[in-house]
Amino acid sequence: MHPFGLDITHVFQTPATGFVISDTALFTVTGVVGGLVAALGVLFRLLIASHNRELAAKELQISEELKNHRQEVTNLIEGYRQRVEEITRERDLYRDMLLDLKQYANKATDLAQEAVQEAQRARSRR
Image (cartoon, rainbow, N blue to C red; front, side, top):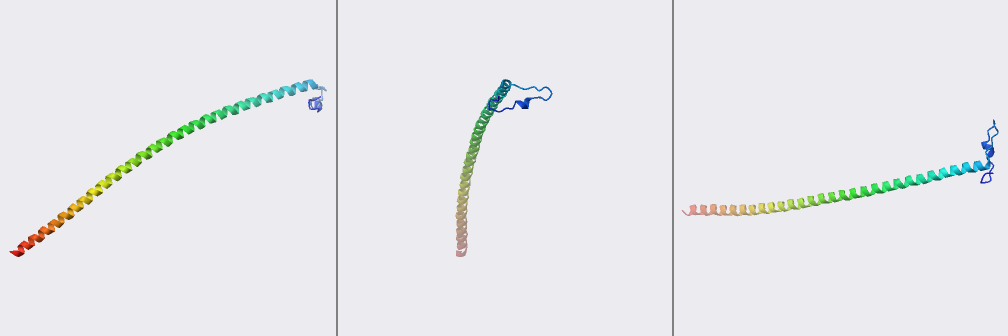
């Protein structure tokens, strides 16, 4: 009799010989097949665990690479920020120099106009 109470021995009979598998043989075959299924299950779980470890290692590697790239980008941004500050300082310096030159030119123009006016007055007095 089958372990679950099912009589399936007629399935294994061949019409030519009338061969019947005994309950013990059927139970043994079922046990072997069950053992193979269990072994396959264990192997499948080991395969999944191996893939999970590989995925975890890849995630860690990607995380480290991302951290390194972020640091590189942060360093580049800091370098650009410093360069912008330097250029801004230079621009302010040149602007101040230009304003000073403009004031100097205005003073020189005023002095030249005063000199011309003084020269004209001096000529008109003669």
